Length: 559
Image (tube, rainbow, N blue to C red):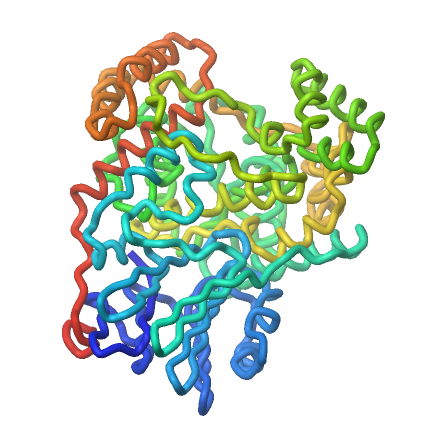
Protein backbone atom coordinates (compact mmCIF):
# COMPACT_ATOMS: atom_id res chain seq x y z
CA UNK A 1 0.00 0.00 0.00
CA UNK A 2 1.29 3.45 -0.97
CA UNK A 3 1.20 6.13 1.74
CA UNK A 4 3.30 8.88 3.31
CA UNK A 5 3.74 10.48 6.70
CA UNK A 6 5.94 12.36 9.10
CA UNK A 7 6.58 13.14 12.75
CA UNK A 8 7.74 16.11 14.76
CA UNK A 9 11.30 16.11 16.14
CA UNK A 10 11.32 13.95 19.23
CA UNK A 11 13.55 12.13 21.63
CA UNK A 12 11.69 9.01 20.51
CA UNK A 13 11.08 9.34 16.75
CA UNK A 14 9.34 6.52 14.88
CA UNK A 15 9.09 5.52 11.24
CA UNK A 16 7.34 2.55 9.62
CA UNK A 17 9.40 -0.50 8.69
CA UNK A 18 10.20 -0.60 4.99
CA UNK A 19 9.85 3.17 4.59
CA UNK A 20 11.92 5.42 2.39
CA UNK A 21 13.10 8.42 4.40
CA UNK A 22 12.81 11.62 2.35
CA UNK A 23 13.84 14.08 5.07
CA UNK A 24 15.37 13.84 8.52
CA UNK A 25 14.88 16.27 11.41
CA UNK A 26 11.91 16.20 11.16
CA UNK A 27 11.31 12.86 9.51
CA UNK A 28 9.23 12.57 6.34
CA UNK A 29 8.79 9.22 4.63
CA UNK A 30 6.99 7.29 1.93
CA UNK A 31 5.95 3.64 1.91
CA UNK A 32 5.30 1.63 -1.23
CA UNK A 33 5.99 2.55 -4.86
CA UNK A 34 5.80 6.31 -5.48
CA UNK A 35 6.21 7.40 -9.12
CA UNK A 36 7.98 10.72 -9.58
CA UNK A 37 4.81 12.47 -10.76
CA UNK A 38 3.05 11.68 -7.47
CA UNK A 39 5.70 13.11 -5.13
CA UNK A 40 7.74 16.21 -5.88
CA UNK A 41 9.99 18.19 -3.57
CA UNK A 42 11.86 21.48 -3.47
CA UNK A 43 14.61 21.98 -0.90
CA UNK A 44 15.35 25.64 -0.11
CA UNK A 45 17.92 26.83 2.45
CA UNK A 46 15.48 27.21 5.34
CA UNK A 47 12.25 25.68 4.02
CA UNK A 48 11.44 22.44 2.29
CA UNK A 49 8.21 21.65 0.49
CA UNK A 50 6.72 18.43 -0.88
CA UNK A 51 3.52 17.72 -2.79
CA UNK A 52 1.94 14.27 -2.72
CA UNK A 53 -0.68 13.30 -5.29
CA UNK A 54 -1.82 14.56 -8.69
CA UNK A 55 -1.01 18.24 -9.03
CA UNK A 56 -0.76 20.67 -11.93
CA UNK A 57 1.93 22.83 -10.29
CA UNK A 58 5.43 22.90 -11.74
CA UNK A 59 8.66 23.11 -9.76
CA UNK A 60 8.73 26.90 -10.12
CA UNK A 61 5.31 27.15 -8.46
CA UNK A 62 6.44 24.78 -5.71
CA UNK A 63 9.50 26.92 -5.13
CA UNK A 64 7.40 30.07 -4.80
CA UNK A 65 5.00 28.30 -2.43
CA UNK A 66 7.90 27.16 -0.25
CA UNK A 67 8.72 30.81 0.49
CA UNK A 68 5.14 32.12 0.66
CA UNK A 69 3.85 33.63 3.89
CA UNK A 70 0.57 31.75 3.46
CA UNK A 71 1.15 28.25 2.11
CA UNK A 72 -2.54 27.48 1.58
CA UNK A 73 -3.15 30.63 -0.46
CA UNK A 74 -0.08 29.89 -2.58
CA UNK A 75 -0.98 26.25 -3.27
CA UNK A 76 -4.74 25.88 -2.84
CA UNK A 77 -5.75 26.86 -6.37
CA UNK A 78 -3.61 24.28 -8.19
CA UNK A 79 -5.56 21.69 -10.17
CA UNK A 80 -5.61 18.07 -9.00
CA UNK A 81 -6.02 16.21 -5.71
CA UNK A 82 -2.98 16.55 -3.49
CA UNK A 83 -1.49 17.26 -0.06
CA UNK A 84 1.14 19.97 0.46
CA UNK A 85 3.79 19.59 3.19
CA UNK A 86 6.25 22.27 4.30
CA UNK A 87 8.78 22.31 7.10
CA UNK A 88 11.18 24.94 8.41
CA UNK A 89 14.71 24.73 9.73
CA UNK A 90 13.47 24.75 13.33
CA UNK A 91 11.25 21.71 12.77
CA UNK A 92 7.83 23.31 12.31
CA UNK A 93 5.41 21.27 10.16
CA UNK A 94 2.67 22.77 8.00
CA UNK A 95 0.41 20.40 6.06
CA UNK A 96 -2.40 21.64 3.79
CA UNK A 97 -5.19 19.14 3.12
CA UNK A 98 -7.22 19.00 -0.06
CA UNK A 99 -10.71 20.50 -0.21
CA UNK A 100 -12.80 17.47 -1.11
CA UNK A 101 -11.31 14.73 1.13
CA UNK A 102 -9.95 12.82 -1.87
CA UNK A 103 -6.55 12.79 -0.10
CA UNK A 104 -7.32 12.03 3.56
CA UNK A 105 -4.84 12.87 6.33
CA UNK A 106 -4.71 11.57 9.91
CA UNK A 107 -2.83 12.13 13.15
CA UNK A 108 -1.97 9.99 16.14
CA UNK A 109 -0.46 10.98 19.48
CA UNK A 110 2.18 8.72 20.96
CA UNK A 111 4.52 9.01 23.91
CA UNK A 112 7.19 10.62 21.74
CA UNK A 113 4.89 13.26 20.20
CA UNK A 114 2.69 13.57 17.11
CA UNK A 115 2.75 11.37 14.01
CA UNK A 116 0.69 12.17 10.91
CA UNK A 117 0.10 10.11 7.78
CA UNK A 118 -2.12 9.57 4.76
CA UNK A 119 -3.20 6.11 6.00
CA UNK A 120 -5.31 5.64 9.10
CA UNK A 121 -4.74 1.88 9.11
CA UNK A 122 -0.97 2.42 9.09
CA UNK A 123 -1.20 4.83 12.04
CA UNK A 124 -3.32 2.32 13.95
CA UNK A 125 -0.12 0.28 14.30
CA UNK A 126 0.89 2.93 16.86
CA UNK A 127 -2.44 2.98 18.70
CA UNK A 128 -3.26 -0.69 19.14
CA UNK A 129 -4.72 -1.78 15.76
CA UNK A 130 -8.28 -1.53 17.08
CA UNK A 131 -11.30 -0.74 14.91
CA UNK A 132 -13.33 2.16 16.29
CA UNK A 133 -16.69 0.48 16.80
CA UNK A 134 -18.55 3.75 17.38
CA UNK A 135 -17.31 5.09 14.05
CA UNK A 136 -18.30 1.84 12.38
CA UNK A 137 -21.77 2.06 13.93
CA UNK A 138 -22.24 5.55 12.54
CA UNK A 139 -20.98 4.36 9.14
CA UNK A 140 -23.74 1.76 9.07
CA UNK A 141 -26.35 4.47 9.64
CA UNK A 142 -24.98 6.77 6.93
CA UNK A 143 -21.76 5.73 5.20
CA UNK A 144 -21.35 9.20 3.69
CA UNK A 145 -21.12 11.06 6.99
CA UNK A 146 -19.81 8.87 9.80
CA UNK A 147 -18.48 10.57 12.92
CA UNK A 148 -16.50 13.51 11.49
CA UNK A 149 -13.89 13.70 14.26
CA UNK A 150 -13.16 9.98 14.30
CA UNK A 151 -11.65 7.51 11.84
CA UNK A 152 -12.26 3.81 11.38
CA UNK A 153 -9.39 3.19 13.83
CA UNK A 154 -9.28 3.95 17.55
CA UNK A 155 -6.81 6.67 18.47
CA UNK A 156 -6.41 7.87 14.87
CA UNK A 157 -7.94 11.30 14.20
CA UNK A 158 -8.73 12.72 10.74
CA UNK A 159 -7.60 16.19 9.73
CA UNK A 160 -10.70 17.82 8.16
CA UNK A 161 -10.54 18.53 4.43
CA UNK A 162 -9.81 22.12 3.53
CA UNK A 163 -7.80 22.60 6.73
CA UNK A 164 -4.21 23.35 7.68
CA UNK A 165 -2.36 21.12 10.16
CA UNK A 166 0.46 22.79 12.05
CA UNK A 167 2.80 20.82 14.33
CA UNK A 168 5.46 22.64 16.32
CA UNK A 169 8.78 21.27 17.46
CA UNK A 170 7.22 21.12 20.93
CA UNK A 171 4.44 18.85 19.57
CA UNK A 172 1.73 21.49 19.77
CA UNK A 173 -0.87 20.53 17.17
CA UNK A 174 -3.32 23.03 15.68
CA UNK A 175 -5.90 22.56 12.92
CA UNK A 176 -7.42 25.61 11.22
CA UNK A 177 -9.59 26.02 8.10
CA UNK A 178 -7.97 27.54 5.03
CA UNK A 179 -10.67 27.14 2.37
CA UNK A 180 -14.04 28.69 1.71
CA UNK A 181 -15.78 28.86 -1.68
CA UNK A 182 -14.85 31.79 -3.90
CA UNK A 183 -17.49 33.89 -5.60
CA UNK A 184 -17.44 34.29 -9.37
CA UNK A 185 -19.97 35.32 -11.99
CA UNK A 186 -21.60 32.43 -13.88
CA UNK A 187 -19.45 32.85 -16.98
CA UNK A 188 -16.27 32.76 -14.92
CA UNK A 189 -17.56 29.71 -13.05
CA UNK A 190 -17.96 27.70 -16.28
CA UNK A 191 -14.46 28.75 -17.34
CA UNK A 192 -13.15 27.73 -13.93
CA UNK A 193 -14.75 24.27 -14.15
CA UNK A 194 -13.34 23.78 -17.63
CA UNK A 195 -9.80 24.86 -16.78
CA UNK A 196 -9.68 22.86 -13.54
CA UNK A 197 -10.89 19.75 -15.35
CA UNK A 198 -8.46 20.14 -18.25
CA UNK A 199 -5.50 20.82 -15.96
CA UNK A 200 -6.44 18.06 -13.50
CA UNK A 201 -6.74 15.42 -16.23
CA UNK A 202 -3.51 16.57 -17.89
CA UNK A 203 -1.60 16.33 -14.59
CA UNK A 204 -2.64 12.69 -14.32
CA UNK A 205 -2.24 11.53 -17.91
CA UNK A 206 0.39 13.40 -19.91
CA UNK A 207 3.13 11.01 -20.96
CA UNK A 208 1.54 7.97 -19.32
CA UNK A 209 -0.35 4.87 -20.47
CA UNK A 210 -3.97 5.66 -19.61
CA UNK A 211 -7.32 3.90 -19.54
CA UNK A 212 -10.71 5.34 -18.68
CA UNK A 213 -14.26 4.30 -17.93
CA UNK A 214 -16.43 4.94 -20.98
CA UNK A 215 -20.03 4.90 -19.82
CA UNK A 216 -22.13 7.97 -18.98
CA UNK A 217 -21.58 11.63 -19.77
CA UNK A 218 -19.19 12.20 -16.86
CA UNK A 219 -16.71 9.46 -17.77
CA UNK A 220 -17.05 10.22 -21.49
CA UNK A 221 -16.04 13.83 -20.86
CA UNK A 222 -12.99 12.64 -18.91
CA UNK A 223 -12.04 10.22 -21.71
CA UNK A 224 -12.33 12.90 -24.41
CA UNK A 225 -10.22 15.33 -22.39
CA UNK A 226 -7.59 12.68 -21.61
CA UNK A 227 -7.29 11.84 -25.31
CA UNK A 228 -6.09 15.42 -25.91
CA UNK A 229 -2.88 14.56 -24.03
CA UNK A 230 -2.13 11.05 -25.31
CA UNK A 231 -3.59 7.64 -26.20
CA UNK A 232 -6.48 6.45 -24.03
CA UNK A 233 -8.15 3.06 -23.79
CA UNK A 234 -11.87 3.44 -23.00
CA UNK A 235 -13.56 0.54 -21.19
CA UNK A 236 -17.33 -0.03 -21.35
CA UNK A 237 -18.90 -2.70 -19.17
CA UNK A 238 -22.14 -4.38 -20.27
CA UNK A 239 -24.08 -7.55 -19.46
CA UNK A 240 -22.97 -10.38 -21.73
CA UNK A 241 -26.45 -10.81 -23.19
CA UNK A 242 -26.84 -7.09 -24.00
CA UNK A 243 -25.24 -6.22 -27.31
CA UNK A 244 -26.74 -2.83 -28.12
CA UNK A 245 -28.26 0.27 -26.55
CA UNK A 246 -27.38 2.12 -23.36
CA UNK A 247 -23.69 2.75 -22.74
CA UNK A 248 -22.73 0.46 -25.64
CA UNK A 249 -24.48 2.64 -28.19
CA UNK A 250 -22.76 5.80 -27.02
CA UNK A 251 -19.33 4.17 -26.63
CA UNK A 252 -19.42 2.78 -30.16
CA UNK A 253 -20.55 6.12 -31.55
CA UNK A 254 -17.67 8.01 -29.95
CA UNK A 255 -14.90 8.71 -32.44
CA UNK A 256 -12.10 10.81 -30.97
CA UNK A 257 -8.45 10.90 -32.12
CA UNK A 258 -6.28 9.03 -29.64
CA UNK A 259 -9.18 7.10 -28.06
CA UNK A 260 -9.50 3.35 -28.56
CA UNK A 261 -12.27 1.22 -27.07
CA UNK A 262 -12.72 -2.16 -25.48
CA UNK A 263 -15.83 -3.87 -24.13
CA UNK A 264 -15.95 -5.79 -20.84
CA UNK A 265 -18.67 -8.43 -21.07
CA UNK A 266 -20.10 -8.99 -17.60
CA UNK A 267 -20.63 -12.68 -17.00
CA UNK A 268 -22.16 -14.47 -13.99
CA UNK A 269 -18.79 -14.45 -12.21
CA UNK A 270 -18.86 -10.63 -12.34
CA UNK A 271 -22.20 -10.25 -10.58
CA UNK A 272 -22.24 -8.04 -7.48
CA UNK A 273 -21.52 -9.91 -4.23
CA UNK A 274 -19.65 -12.67 -6.12
CA UNK A 275 -16.33 -13.85 -4.67
CA UNK A 276 -13.34 -12.62 -6.67
CA UNK A 277 -10.38 -14.70 -7.78
CA UNK A 278 -8.18 -13.01 -5.17
CA UNK A 279 -8.74 -11.79 -1.63
CA UNK A 280 -10.19 -8.36 -0.89
CA UNK A 281 -7.22 -6.15 0.08
CA UNK A 282 -7.26 -4.36 3.42
CA UNK A 283 -7.99 -0.62 3.19
CA UNK A 284 -8.25 2.33 5.56
CA UNK A 285 -12.05 2.04 5.66
CA UNK A 286 -14.73 0.03 3.84
CA UNK A 287 -14.23 0.48 0.10
CA UNK A 288 -17.30 1.26 -2.08
CA UNK A 289 -16.27 -1.33 -4.68
CA UNK A 290 -15.98 -4.19 -2.18
CA UNK A 291 -19.25 -5.80 -3.28
CA UNK A 292 -18.30 -5.47 -6.96
CA UNK A 293 -14.66 -6.52 -6.48
CA UNK A 294 -15.06 -9.49 -8.84
CA UNK A 295 -15.91 -7.15 -11.72
CA UNK A 296 -13.72 -4.24 -10.62
CA UNK A 297 -10.58 -6.35 -10.19
CA UNK A 298 -11.15 -8.10 -13.53
CA UNK A 299 -11.47 -4.74 -15.29
CA UNK A 300 -8.30 -3.43 -13.64
CA UNK A 301 -6.36 -6.55 -14.62
CA UNK A 302 -7.57 -6.15 -18.20
CA UNK A 303 -6.36 -2.56 -18.53
CA UNK A 304 -3.09 -3.46 -16.80
CA UNK A 305 -2.53 -6.28 -19.30
CA UNK A 306 -3.19 -3.76 -22.07
CA UNK A 307 -0.34 -1.65 -20.71
CA UNK A 308 -2.27 0.94 -18.71
CA UNK A 309 -0.75 2.30 -15.51
CA UNK A 310 -3.38 4.99 -14.84
CA UNK A 311 -7.16 4.52 -14.84
CA UNK A 312 -9.59 7.44 -14.73
CA UNK A 313 -13.21 7.30 -13.62
CA UNK A 314 -16.22 9.62 -13.78
CA UNK A 315 -17.01 9.14 -10.08
CA UNK A 316 -18.21 12.35 -8.46
CA UNK A 317 -19.82 13.71 -11.61
CA UNK A 318 -23.34 13.00 -10.40
CA UNK A 319 -22.58 14.57 -7.02
CA UNK A 320 -21.35 17.76 -8.68
CA UNK A 321 -23.66 18.15 -11.64
CA UNK A 322 -26.83 16.23 -10.75
CA UNK A 323 -27.45 17.08 -7.07
CA UNK A 324 -30.73 16.47 -5.21
CA UNK A 325 -33.13 19.44 -4.96
CA UNK A 326 -31.41 21.08 -2.00
CA UNK A 327 -31.61 24.41 -3.86
CA UNK A 328 -35.27 24.55 -2.78
CA UNK A 329 -34.06 25.58 0.68
CA UNK A 330 -32.03 28.44 -0.79
CA UNK A 331 -35.10 29.65 -2.66
CA UNK A 332 -37.08 29.68 0.60
CA UNK A 333 -34.29 31.61 2.36
CA UNK A 334 -34.56 34.24 -0.40
CA UNK A 335 -38.36 34.36 -0.29
CA UNK A 336 -38.77 32.89 -3.79
CA UNK A 337 -41.64 30.61 -2.80
CA UNK A 338 -43.29 30.45 -6.23
CA UNK A 339 -40.05 29.34 -7.90
CA UNK A 340 -39.50 26.82 -5.09
CA UNK A 341 -42.96 25.30 -5.61
CA UNK A 342 -42.49 25.13 -9.37
CA UNK A 343 -39.09 23.42 -9.09
CA UNK A 344 -40.43 20.96 -6.50
CA UNK A 345 -43.26 20.00 -8.85
CA UNK A 346 -40.85 19.66 -11.78
CA UNK A 347 -38.50 17.45 -9.77
CA UNK A 348 -41.42 15.31 -8.56
CA UNK A 349 -42.75 14.84 -12.09
CA UNK A 350 -39.37 13.71 -13.37
CA UNK A 351 -39.09 11.10 -10.62
CA UNK A 352 -42.79 10.23 -10.35
CA UNK A 353 -43.05 11.11 -6.66
CA UNK A 354 -45.19 13.50 -4.64
CA UNK A 355 -43.87 17.08 -4.44
CA UNK A 356 -45.32 17.71 -0.97
CA UNK A 357 -42.50 16.13 1.08
CA UNK A 358 -40.04 18.26 -0.93
CA UNK A 359 -42.03 21.43 -0.27
CA UNK A 360 -42.36 20.59 3.44
CA UNK A 361 -38.61 19.98 3.82
CA UNK A 362 -37.82 23.20 1.96
CA UNK A 363 -40.15 25.25 4.17
CA UNK A 364 -38.47 23.72 7.23
CA UNK A 365 -35.13 24.70 5.64
CA UNK A 366 -34.06 21.07 5.97
CA UNK A 367 -31.48 20.64 3.21
CA UNK A 368 -30.19 17.46 4.87
CA UNK A 369 -33.54 15.73 4.37
CA UNK A 370 -33.69 16.82 0.72
CA UNK A 371 -30.17 15.47 0.23
CA UNK A 372 -30.96 12.04 1.68
CA UNK A 373 -33.55 9.89 -0.11
CA UNK A 374 -33.62 7.11 2.53
CA UNK A 375 -34.29 8.89 5.84
CA UNK A 376 -35.40 5.88 7.89
CA UNK A 377 -33.08 3.61 9.85
CA UNK A 378 -32.92 0.03 8.46
CA UNK A 379 -34.60 -2.53 10.68
CA UNK A 380 -31.38 -4.48 11.21
CA UNK A 381 -29.61 -1.55 12.85
CA UNK A 382 -29.95 -1.84 16.60
CA UNK A 383 -31.69 1.13 18.24
CA UNK A 384 -28.58 2.66 19.82
CA UNK A 385 -26.32 2.11 16.82
CA UNK A 386 -24.73 5.27 15.48
CA UNK A 387 -27.07 7.71 17.23
CA UNK A 388 -25.70 11.24 16.92
CA UNK A 389 -26.86 14.73 16.21
CA UNK A 390 -27.73 15.41 12.60
CA UNK A 391 -25.15 17.45 10.70
CA UNK A 392 -26.04 21.09 10.19
CA UNK A 393 -26.79 21.52 6.49
CA UNK A 394 -28.30 25.03 6.23
CA UNK A 395 -28.20 25.46 2.46
CA UNK A 396 -27.50 23.80 -0.87
CA UNK A 397 -23.80 24.67 -0.96
CA UNK A 398 -23.23 22.95 2.37
CA UNK A 399 -25.15 19.93 1.08
CA UNK A 400 -23.01 19.81 -2.08
CA UNK A 401 -19.77 20.04 -0.10
CA UNK A 402 -20.95 17.27 2.22
CA UNK A 403 -21.99 15.14 -0.76
CA UNK A 404 -18.61 15.45 -2.49
CA UNK A 405 -16.67 14.79 0.70
CA UNK A 406 -18.91 11.88 1.57
CA UNK A 407 -18.14 10.31 -1.81
CA UNK A 408 -14.46 11.27 -2.13
CA UNK A 409 -13.36 10.02 1.31
CA UNK A 410 -14.38 6.36 0.82
CA UNK A 411 -13.31 6.51 -2.85
CA UNK A 412 -9.75 6.75 -1.53
CA UNK A 413 -10.21 3.18 -0.29
CA UNK A 414 -11.06 2.16 -3.87
CA UNK A 415 -7.76 3.75 -4.93
CA UNK A 416 -6.04 1.55 -2.35
CA UNK A 417 -7.77 -1.52 -3.84
CA UNK A 418 -6.48 -0.58 -7.30
CA UNK A 419 -2.94 -0.07 -5.97
CA UNK A 420 -2.87 -3.74 -5.00
CA UNK A 421 -3.16 -4.55 -8.71
CA UNK A 422 -0.56 -2.00 -9.78
CA UNK A 423 -3.01 0.59 -11.13
CA UNK A 424 -3.24 4.27 -10.20
CA UNK A 425 -6.96 5.01 -9.88
CA UNK A 426 -7.93 8.67 -10.25
CA UNK A 427 -11.24 10.52 -9.86
CA UNK A 428 -10.77 14.02 -11.37
CA UNK A 429 -14.25 15.21 -10.42
CA UNK A 430 -13.19 15.14 -6.77
CA UNK A 431 -10.56 17.85 -7.36
CA UNK A 432 -10.96 20.81 -5.04
CA UNK A 433 -10.55 23.38 -7.82
CA UNK A 434 -13.57 21.90 -9.62
CA UNK A 435 -15.71 21.90 -6.48
CA UNK A 436 -14.71 25.50 -5.82
CA UNK A 437 -15.73 26.53 -9.34
CA UNK A 438 -19.07 24.67 -9.26
CA UNK A 439 -19.98 26.34 -5.99
CA UNK A 440 -19.68 29.71 -7.75
CA UNK A 441 -22.85 28.89 -9.66
CA UNK A 442 -26.01 29.78 -7.68
CA UNK A 443 -27.66 26.58 -6.51
CA UNK A 444 -30.89 27.26 -8.44
CA UNK A 445 -28.86 27.64 -11.65
CA UNK A 446 -27.26 24.24 -11.07
CA UNK A 447 -30.78 22.81 -11.41
CA UNK A 448 -32.62 22.62 -14.72
CA UNK A 449 -35.74 20.68 -15.69
CA UNK A 450 -35.05 20.55 -19.41
CA UNK A 451 -31.22 20.46 -19.39
CA UNK A 452 -29.15 17.51 -18.19
CA UNK A 453 -26.13 18.53 -16.07
CA UNK A 454 -26.14 22.13 -17.29
CA UNK A 455 -22.94 23.19 -15.46
CA UNK A 456 -20.92 20.37 -17.04
CA UNK A 457 -22.34 21.05 -20.50
CA UNK A 458 -21.66 24.78 -20.20
CA UNK A 459 -18.08 24.02 -19.19
CA UNK A 460 -16.97 21.27 -21.59
CA UNK A 461 -19.97 20.46 -23.78
CA UNK A 462 -18.22 21.73 -26.90
CA UNK A 463 -15.62 18.96 -26.48
CA UNK A 464 -18.32 16.28 -26.76
CA UNK A 465 -20.01 15.09 -29.97
CA UNK A 466 -23.61 16.23 -30.43
CA UNK A 467 -25.04 12.78 -29.64
CA UNK A 468 -23.27 12.64 -26.28
CA UNK A 469 -24.00 16.27 -25.46
CA UNK A 470 -27.72 15.54 -25.69
CA UNK A 471 -27.62 12.35 -23.65
CA UNK A 472 -29.81 12.42 -20.53
CA UNK A 473 -29.50 8.81 -19.31
CA UNK A 474 -26.85 6.44 -18.05
CA UNK A 475 -26.50 2.68 -17.71
CA UNK A 476 -28.51 1.10 -14.91
CA UNK A 477 -27.37 -2.11 -13.20
CA UNK A 478 -30.01 -2.50 -10.47
CA UNK A 479 -31.15 -5.85 -11.86
CA UNK A 480 -27.57 -7.12 -11.63
CA UNK A 481 -27.64 -6.48 -7.87
CA UNK A 482 -30.86 -8.47 -7.47
CA UNK A 483 -29.39 -11.30 -9.51
CA UNK A 484 -26.13 -11.11 -7.57
CA UNK A 485 -28.01 -11.52 -4.29
CA UNK A 486 -29.96 -14.42 -5.76
CA UNK A 487 -26.84 -16.27 -6.93
CA UNK A 488 -24.82 -15.58 -3.74
CA UNK A 489 -27.68 -15.72 -1.24
CA UNK A 490 -26.28 -18.43 1.05
CA UNK A 491 -22.92 -16.67 1.29
CA UNK A 492 -24.61 -13.34 2.08
CA UNK A 493 -26.86 -14.90 4.72
CA UNK A 494 -23.71 -16.19 6.41
CA UNK A 495 -22.13 -12.72 6.25
CA UNK A 496 -25.25 -11.29 7.88
CA UNK A 497 -24.48 -13.28 11.02
CA UNK A 498 -20.81 -12.37 11.14
CA UNK A 499 -18.55 -9.87 12.87
CA UNK A 500 -21.00 -6.94 12.95
CA UNK A 501 -23.58 -9.11 14.68
CA UNK A 502 -20.94 -10.35 17.15
CA UNK A 503 -20.11 -6.70 17.95
CA UNK A 504 -23.77 -6.03 18.70
CA UNK A 505 -24.06 -3.50 15.87
CA UNK A 506 -26.73 -5.25 13.80
CA UNK A 507 -29.56 -7.72 14.25
CA UNK A 508 -28.95 -10.39 11.60
CA UNK A 509 -32.61 -11.47 11.38
CA UNK A 510 -33.99 -8.36 9.61
CA UNK A 511 -30.92 -8.17 7.38
CA UNK A 512 -31.45 -11.76 6.26
CA UNK A 513 -35.08 -10.95 5.53
CA UNK A 514 -34.03 -7.94 3.44
CA UNK A 515 -31.56 -10.08 1.49
CA UNK A 516 -34.14 -12.79 0.85
CA UNK A 517 -36.61 -10.16 -0.38
CA UNK A 518 -33.96 -8.67 -2.67
CA UNK A 519 -33.25 -12.14 -4.07
CA UNK A 520 -36.94 -12.37 -5.01
CA UNK A 521 -36.74 -9.04 -6.81
CA UNK A 522 -38.49 -6.87 -4.22
CA UNK A 523 -37.84 -3.14 -4.37
CA UNK A 524 -34.68 -2.57 -2.32
CA UNK A 525 -33.05 0.52 -0.86
CA UNK A 526 -29.52 -0.54 -1.71
CA UNK A 527 -27.27 1.97 0.13
CA UNK A 528 -27.82 0.62 3.68
CA UNK A 529 -27.64 -2.99 2.46
CA UNK A 530 -24.38 -2.33 0.65
CA UNK A 531 -22.94 -0.39 3.60
CA UNK A 532 -23.59 -3.28 5.96
CA UNK A 533 -22.18 -6.00 3.70
CA UNK A 534 -19.21 -3.82 2.74
CA UNK A 535 -18.38 -3.21 6.40
CA UNK A 536 -18.56 -6.95 7.09
CA UNK A 537 -16.20 -7.72 4.20
CA UNK A 538 -13.83 -4.96 5.35
CA UNK A 539 -13.65 -6.35 8.88
CA UNK A 540 -12.65 -9.72 7.46
CA UNK A 541 -10.00 -8.14 5.23
CA UNK A 542 -8.32 -6.08 7.97
CA UNK A 543 -8.52 -8.96 10.44
CA UNK A 544 -6.48 -11.22 8.18
CA UNK A 545 -4.05 -8.58 6.82
CA UNK A 546 -0.63 -7.97 8.37
CA UNK A 547 -0.40 -4.82 10.46
CA UNK A 548 2.05 -2.00 9.81
CA UNK A 549 5.14 -2.27 11.99
CA UNK A 550 7.04 0.77 13.27
CA UNK A 551 10.70 1.29 14.12
CA UNK A 552 11.69 3.34 17.20
CA UNK A 553 14.48 5.21 15.41
CA UNK A 554 14.77 6.56 11.88
CA UNK A 555 17.91 4.55 11.26
CA UNK A 556 16.54 1.07 11.92
CA UNK A 557 14.45 -0.80 9.40
CA UNK A 558 14.37 2.15 6.99
CA UNK A 559 14.95 1.35 3.33
